[in-house]
Image (tube, rainbow, N blue to C red; front, side, top):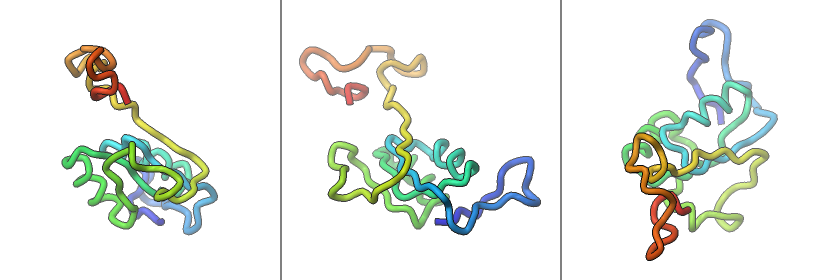
Length: 116
């Protein structure tokens, strides 16, 4: 699972190791920020879970060989490869200052958006 990009500021001599020592999976992957950092640290990426179509386009461009899943509620041991590290971005649309700040879920729908 070698990623071909180089680390910014050190383009001339940094490359992913041919065989990463640890393997990671990414939940709520977004556009792959965790994955970039994990690869810089020498980890390989086994899978990504992200539902936003625009984010998936970015992930497919930079990690075309990595399996993608779109519903975290349907992921688990039955369909995800075993990994050493699980990284994840909290789905924060309802609590982020960039969002509507409506909080986690509602009484009628406790798992609405950030309620996951």
